[in-house]
Length: 113
Image 1 (cartoon, helix red, strand yellow):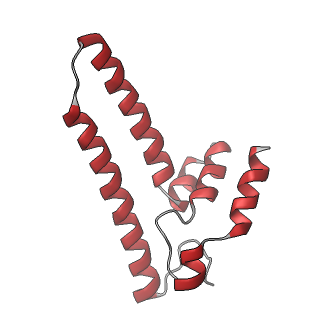
Image 2 (cartoon, helix red, strand yellow):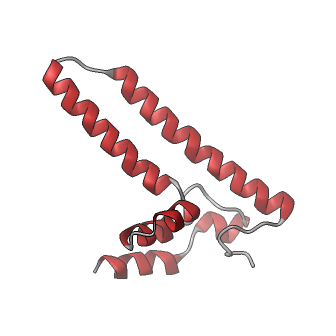
Image 3 (spheres, helix red, strand yellow):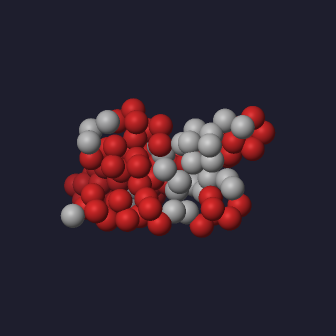
């Protein structure tokens, strides 16, 4: 059932990619999730590292939540660092991938070939 949903999303396409001919920050996300379900970690990272990054961030934040429950205090700094690191890495990947596409003609996902 889940693979049917992923297949539908992949065929639907991306509005930004189809109209502006650049990759959006989420492009390759469906393929990354599919590769992750097949335990192909490197392929998942190649398609879109945000998927694995999001999982790692969620696990880290759950650890912070457990630690907060044990100590009875809120650890805002750890949350801010986790969210900031996720956004910086995700945005950097988005920018680098589009610079490679627009300036050098390197199409990492093969969607514009």
